[in-house]
Length: 113
Length: 117
Image (cartoon, rainbow over all chains, first blue to last red; front, side, top):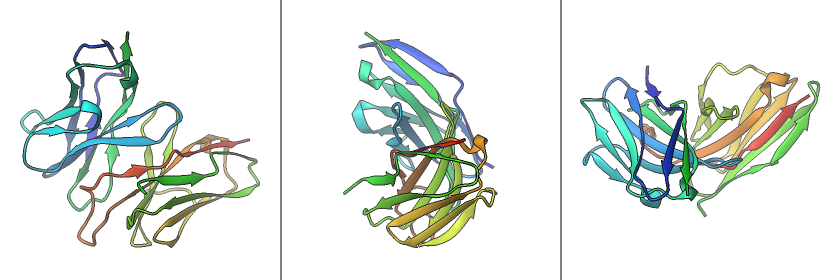
């Protein structure tokens, strides 16, 4: 069975500072890892994914994530946060052949000016 | 067109009503999904369709009945719902292949906000 943990319910960061949203996963075999963002009263938007290859993945809106197999982590990062980045962020994992995405509990990101 | 549309945006229904949620995409995706999401919680997978055939049913109660009439449309028929079924219902789609498609990102619609009285 696959699972995802997002250990922080909320992350607060000042505008212009770097941000990190943490994610760890558990899956049999090699994982497929995703980050999605959800703004209030909206659907989820895809940010980035790791399938294979380079451990540093770059995505939309200046976000990036680093896959760390030994620590089973896939933390989301951005060098300089914007107030408009404030939203609910979900990490998700799937496994080869599973055709099913399992989401973490979500982390609320608040960026203050 | 990279959009998934859902209608209606909001729906209020009584426990004896029958209603349907609709989802449409024109991205040529052959995998489509229904999720249920409670406030500030992650989406919970309900159903997955692959090439218009139901491939995953996450033990969803029979009062929810999915239908995939063609490769662009996905419906969710609702009957005799309970107040605890009130939630945001999200539709998503992704590229698919018969060999598997779990590595493809999903595109989500804005959702239907359902209230069951």
